[in-house]
Image (tube, rainbow, N blue to C red; front, side, top):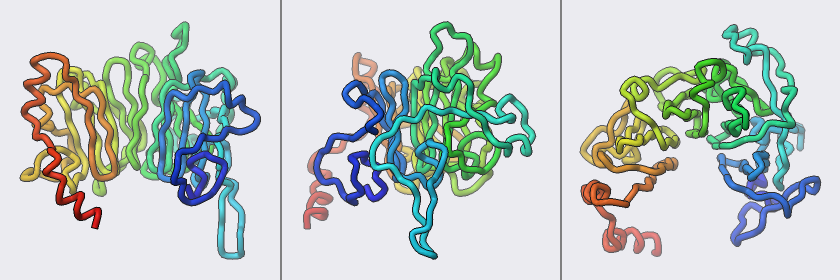
Length: 334
C-alpha cells in the first residue's frame, strides 16, 4: 500500500487487516455499489453498478485517469507524484483527431479533447495491466453505436492501442475499434496482461494490442486474433499474465501462447515452455472453461462440472492432493 492503492486513506505500507475502502467526500459513499475491481502493480480501479469509475494509488504514468501525474520535486534529486490514497470518481473521457479513424502518426500525437458526452458515458467492463487500464462502455439502450473502448496509463509497447508509445493521463477512446464492423459485433469485455490489452466482442472475437513476449514486435493497434476467428472459435473467457495469454471457447477448446517458464502455459512438464502463436492446451481438451485468470507465474481455471461429459473431461486432469503439498508446507513453515 505504499502508493495508497488499497484506498483506505493512508500510505501505511502494509495493511494487515481488513479495512473498508474510503471514497472521496464529494461522492455519496453509502450509495455506491461496487460490482467489479481490478488491480495493477500499484493502483486499483473500481466499477460501480451505475457504470462509474473510481481509482486510487500511483499516478506516475497516468494510471488514475484524472488527467495528470501531479509530478513534483521532493528534493533537488527526488521526484514524487500526486498519488491517491482514497477512491475518487473519474468521469472525463477524451479523444484525439486520430481517433476518428486516421492512421497518421502525427495526428495520433495531437492533443486530446474531452468527449461532448463524457458525463453520459457508463462503463460495463474494466481490467488493469501492470500500469494501464482498459475499459469498455456499457451497451447503449437504443444500440445507436457500438460500445466504445477506452485506455489510459503507461503506453509502452503500444499497449493502449493508439499506434504510439505514449502515456495517457485520461481515459482515451480507441478509434480503430469503431465503425460498421463493430456495430453488429460490439465489444463486451476487457482483459489485460502486464503489457498487453485484449477486447472480447459479442461474436467471440478477440482483438489484441501490446506485447507479452520478450521477443518479437509489439502490436500498436488492436488486431484480430484471426487464427481463432477464422476457425470459427467463439471465445468466452480470456486473460493475460506477465508473459502469457489464454483464450477459452464455448466448445471446450483452450489455447495459450507466450513465455511460460514455470509451466503457466499448461503445455506439460516435458513440452515446450513457450509459443509464438496460439497453441492448444491438450490437458483441457473438451473441458468447458467458464473463466480463466493469469497470474505472474501461474494460471487458474474454473471448469464446468454439470453433466457426465464434463465429469469425463475433468477426470483426465491430474489432481493435487494434500500429501502432494506437504513438503512445500513444511518448507514454508520452517
